[in-house]
Image (cartoon, rainbow, N blue to C red; front, side, top):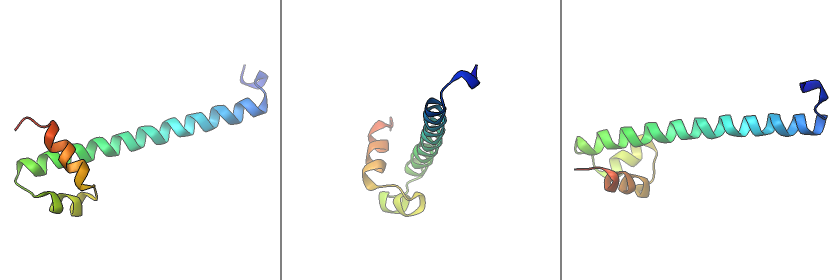
Length: 70
C-alpha cells in the first residue's frame, strides 16, 4: 500500500509524522516544567528562582500560580 503512494505524498507524511513527534516532545517538556513549577511554588520558591532553575518565563510561573488551588 505504501508503495502506491506518490513520493511527494510520502515526503509530506514523513514530515507530518516528524512534526507530530516534535510537538509531543515539547508538550511533555512543558508538562514537566508545569509540575516542577507547582512543586517549587508549594515549597516557597520565588518566581525569579524558579525562572533561573527551570529556564521558564515569569509569565509561565504566574500562569501556573493562577491555575493552582492554593
